[in-house]
Amino acid sequence: MAMIAKKAPDIQVTVVDINEKRIAAWNSGDLPVFEPGLDEVVTEARGRNLFFSTDVDKNIREADIIFISVNTPTKTYGVGAGRAADLKYIELCARKIAEVSKGDKIVVEKSTLPVRTAESVKRILESAGGQSKFQVLSNPEFLAEGTAVTDLENPDRVLIGGEDSPEGEKAIQALVDVYARWVPRERILTTNVWSSELSKLTANAFLAQRISSINAISALCEATEADVDQVARAIGTDSRIGPKFLRSSVGFGGSCFQKDILNLVYLCEHFGLPEVAAYWEQVVIMNDHQKARFVDRIVKTLFNTVSGKKIALLGFAFKKDTNDTRESPAINVARDLLEEQAKLAIYDPKVPEAMMRQDIGENATADNVTVCQDPYEAIKDAHAVAILTEWDAFKELDYQKVFDLMLKPAFIFDGRNILDLKKLRAIGFEAFGIGKA
Image (cartoon, rainbow, N blue to C red; front, side, top):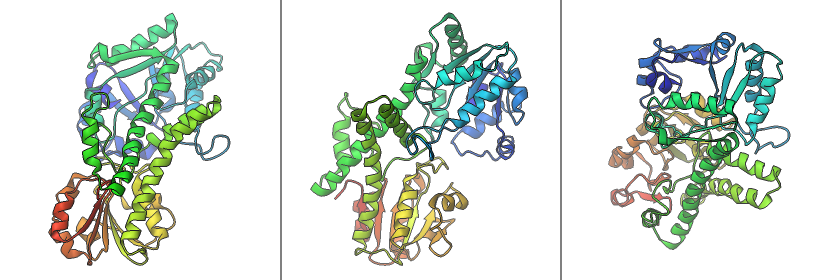
């Protein structure tokens, strides 16, 4: 919304939320989300044509186009628990729009949704029995956290799905005209609404599949003394494959990949496609295995026990340049190490302590988890260091100082393959990467 406001200063954009603290933060100099370049975009447009408000009813009534951008987490209860998307927030939004709307509206699904959700949304909107008419569009987001601003400035594509009718085509064109302010028309793809909804799930599933595929090969590399980075480079030069998303690591995280794959699995099961469901579920199984395998290697290397030993975890966000910890591999690694009775010292430059403790859960007590404000503080007297987020700052640490601060033998486990293992071993470390001997 901030980018639309920046690129189309003649369009008034209002972001609405019932969370007063969150809206207050968006109206302040301390935004609630860390994203490189976002401060500048918000600052440029805020107060000119970008506004943040808690007045839901008023802004719905005044809007021509309404984007539904609420969370769609994996269900934790009832039918489909653990796989299906929880659509209760989508339904609440649709009912509120139906209740207070005056005049015709274009309602845009921005949240990632199962196929044919738009049909349910439209039924709810039309059930109000008022004079308003609604067109429901699907406009899924393909940006990546950490590069979201540049992704929005220069997107690979913008996808808009709508109803195959004169009214639907008119609604699609209205949204096309918004994005066409800065996106070349050939990059704005229009489809039917079902194809658009499924395309988002499929895109995330394919990207996650590539990560799980190279992570599966990383295990074989370790067993055969091959180097996963060299393998990835060799296959990535094949134009049919390409180099992106072939970086082996401790595992993928974030709010989308696992949630969307599990949603896809549930949909396949729902439509009677068990073999297809099992295929996609294996992507998640492989990701969980990679995280468990990483912890297992730490325990076995540290003489088959980490009980009472201090392990420094560098990084807690699921990737660099974000403070988002949703489904971060660091959570599983921390929990598993605590189950092995390790003592953890954690450092991340952007994730607050309260979030780390909340994510880890009840085992994150003051006795066994220390959150540090400096990486060297976390490393001091540690038996091992595990790098779990690929922050650039971790490449720039003084590793001679790191070695001197640690207990000996000093172990480093690079879960992101960002360090030069040969240089670390020359210093004296016992250093290990993913998919490397």
